[in-house]
Picture 1 (cartoon, rainbow, N blue to C red):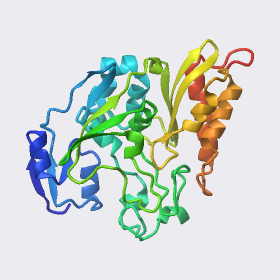
Picture 2: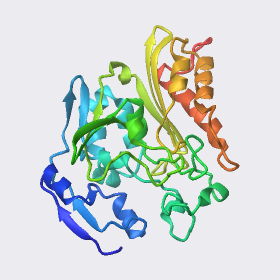
Picture 3: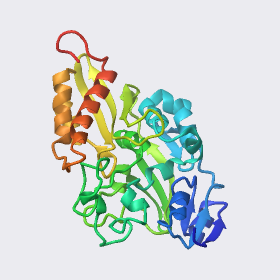
Picture 4: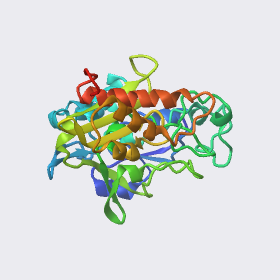
Length: 329
């Protein structure tokens, strides 16, 4: 690890004055500093800021940026109103990491692409602009099939962010120009021609909260994750879904995908395809087809297209009662 300056902030104003890289849980930043991928000259410790509270906000929920993953997953209001978020958090990482990791850091965590994290691989546009993407012609079995570009196919690793995207989460940011609020789907950036730009956090800005709007039918939601082993593995494909049923008809629905996109992937066209349709396996399969129709798989990760479709169908079946007799799913 390279030498760096260290500061500690006692409040938001002091944090913004000190600037540098903000240290919360440190579960990603410290790892990458040890690997010599991240090289900040100044690290500002913000762990003393009063940003851990989770509570009601206009019928929705406000999650402090420094709330730990564990505290969020186990909070009664999260478990009661947004169970898919609790399930998604508990599906990610180990208990020790969840105890340390903050919610704001979780959504900003950097990719686990080995071509990014290992300096022995010389080609990574995300780490070294213009150097190329080693994964495209190399090992891309676990890489993205949605939102990719000719510059980068790295997958976003967060489980929690998938559920947050499905729940229309927004972030409150505090910076030198004051506060602003931005939808999480706009905050996280697809790689396009600039994979080094991963989010819309401006210099000196600090995430202060994650905000979930009221969505009463989100109680009928779930997070389903497929991985190579049961413990501590990143998603090959995952789905966060919530369904509002009017009898046997889908009145409204939320679908977001993990493990297959360069960002947590909101499947809005699939949602539109499912609204007003009967809650049948056929309708779910059609929505899953629509969700993956723009996928751009490569030779080694083509399996993810079918896998993600199956995960969507299974998740929708889970929240609508599972396969039943007759046509209903």
